Structures are given as structure tokens and as C-alpha cells.
Image (cartoon, rainbow, N blue to C red; front, side, top):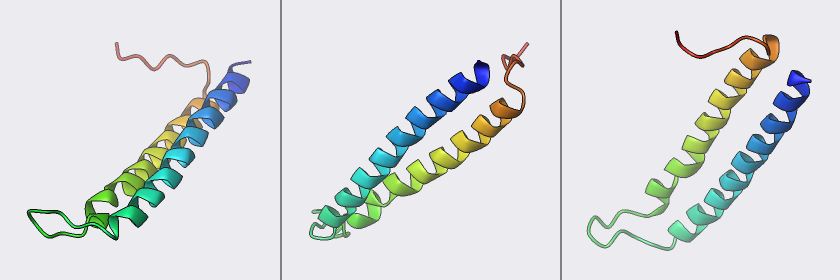
Length: 79
């Protein structure tokens, strides 16, 4: 039953991350038409941090999920 719960929670979290990733790509498209008023920097450059950060978060989440999947009953609180 723990693995089923891990699967449901993992799927919900990955769905959220995928939706945030798609939304951040739309923000990058908007940023192509904008520039920073002070630095004159195209805004797609700072907006690029969103999909990069979300992809990294998804990778870390998948690694933690795989670790939890291999040993679902182990308590991971520090002692």
C-alpha cells in the first residue's frame, strides 16, 4: 500500500511540475518582446531560470522518489 501511495503522490507532483514548466515556456515567449528598463537585458534570459529550475527540481524529485520506491518502509528522519 505504501508503494501505491508513493505512485499517486509522485504522479500528482510530476503533473504539477509539468504544468509549471509549460507555463514558464509561455512566460519566456512574452519575455522575448520585453527588455529590462535599467539593464536593457531581454527578459527571456531571467525568465529562463524558471524552466531550468523546474527541470532540476523534477530530476531531484525523481531521484528521491526512486529511493523511496526501493525501500518504502524505511524512516528517513535524521537521528
